[in-house]
Length: 248
Image 1 (cartoon, rainbow, N blue to C red):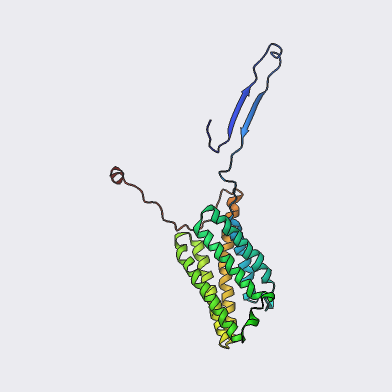
Image 2 (image 1 turned 180 degrees about the vertical axis):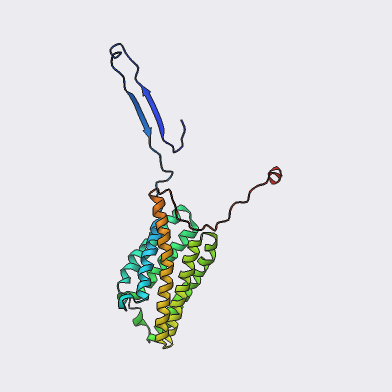
């Protein structure tokens, strides 16, 4: 018996007896349904969903759409959507052995948690600084270090696909803008800081659009669409072995 995942049909015919010669005998069919090679769903889809939702909300608040000037509502999004959601996906990617995805989702979870802590009143982080200028400069350093890490992801993404390159390029530019905005605020240039914050929001919204696009592709694949959205794969194709190389 074959042990592959294709459907197997077994037919068993009943043996006719003297009492049953006049009665048509049934044919029993037992069909084995296709078995999934793994019990795990594609947890990367959840990670991309969390990324798209959380960063779209952050982007719209940075851009101050509809006159929004306070970010209190982002506390819950950063803790429970971006933070815990990305951390869950990080653990699952670790179990799957996917180094790049595990590192990205794990560090993004840390980024969301740390950002959420600065916005959570119970931590009283701002109160620990001697002045607003010092606090803003400290946040500038915070975002500059994260931007350095995200640049590494941008560089490595050139071995993945065009959509990931787009996402990490815009995320990295976003965080550099935020670092510059807080440095400007720390220097007393409020107008420049506001412009940089809004620019960061626009860049992050662009990065989020890449996430929504990839999420749609993942969902279409998950429910069995025959058509898939192009991602622009940049992965190196394996080198073809020539007959001469094969003989050697």
